[in-house]
Image (cartoon, rainbow, N blue to C red; front, side, top):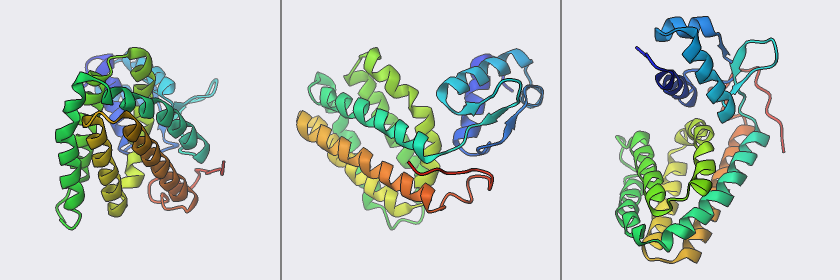
Length: 229
């Protein structure tokens, strides 16, 4: 049972990014409060944070809803991610903490090599990526850079569901990440930045293609309109 505002936010964030609450779902304060066992105040606060994250929409006088997944918004998120993360990994390669990325390179490579393993879990890849994010925070302790990057993370978490439906895409992403981590660990800032940029652009192209091809049809409601950039 959630008892604090942060718990309510975390619970709703998990529901939205896992698509338990898909785009377009209404978010009525009284219903959410009853389900989570809290008053409406922490629910209202959580919805305000989720609006700031871009995961909730609410027009004046209307019930809040889970925001749509559109191509334009996806491109905007990836543009920000490319600018921020590509620069961050270059700084990480120049940091004394760059050695943190050597074991991550091995973890990503093992995941990619296990492509034929029927028991390979997408959660395993997400766990490695979470460790990558933590290593980046330690190697680049710059809140003015990583703060905005972290702000895009909630939106990216929701988009992960589209990639997880394609095992070959996960393998490719893991191989790119392994190469990137090796470059960071070796102190090669230029190579780390190049790989990061190429990886993010490849991921963006995959997301846009997926959305426009309608391959997310089982994840989004029929009423969702996807617009080309």
